[in-house]
Length: 420
Image 1 (spheres, rainbow, N blue to C red):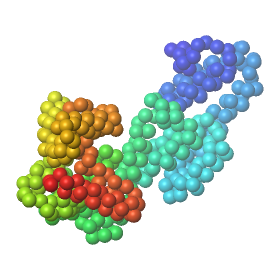
Image 2 (tube, rainbow, N blue to C red):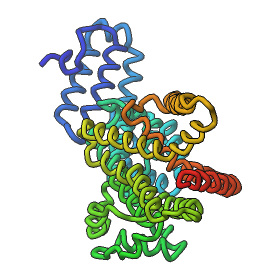
Image 3 (cartoon, one colour):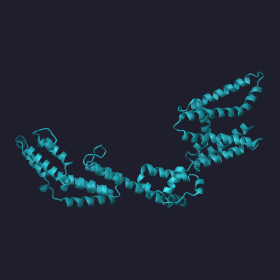
Image 4 (cartoon, rainbow, N blue to C red):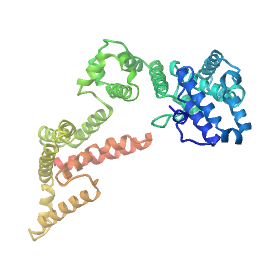
């Protein structure tokens, strides 16, 4: 193998090109890992410099570079001393990041680390130590990589091996996961409910009580925590109670805040709206059926047949026709009033038809663009039913109280008018 093959360059008498090639090959040919390869690289470098043109043109620069890169003469620290320095550096970084970064900057800009060989060993040992220590965070890794010149964002990182980078990333993930688990443990000390929720999450075999499903948002918060662990900290899944994971995977009915608000709000609307109704049982059954079909039934069908849009389209079409029929029955009273308001019997139906067409056009104009013609009516009713909860979620206690009171009055008035 020729010296140029070892240096991985074309034959040249330019000393700067030879030195750059030698410095580049040093990153992958470490004396502690490949002593034979390192010796071969040194010999190739010396032979390349021995070419008459190179030696004659750059003799003084060559001597300076040789002194700078010669490990046995210019590195005052042994490998063990560099290892000790790295150990102290990483310990300081994990204890006080600011002081550690200042110390690292000082070491890199002064003293023996100005030597290429010593700097290479320091970089190698630093990466190895960071990959072994617990408590390495992502911010520490990013700052150290910037100071050391590790191009960790590249597909093939420079200045650090892929195995070393993978080990450091593993430590950062473990650190972030431990911090997240500690935050859950700290939150559990704030209230009895949070404590019980953390016990369900962490104690193996602990079962979810049935009454906990009736607490608004209790199961939802557990689901959210488990989803965050699965998505961002999968290493913590081994700490999560397997009984809880099994229960949550098969649990369908659990009270959340939206359902609780829905029951209270619409319960009050129905109670106020049918107080003078002659057929309360019939009308309450119709109202509750429409509400359940438009909210819970529709969402469950979309979830179950999310891979078969034709079935969902047929259901939404039938639901729209059903709603249209119910509203035609409700608005028949308005049709009768319009019919008797004029001497000409034909003007009443015409005005009613124009009103219905205007309402449909208005719904089409303000609805989202992803709605289709077959679910226009069903989606509109669903939005109408869930609109109070959308307003109740907004910030501001005064706004919530005022808007809920206004909507309670309007919705109950509409129910009163419809059943009359």
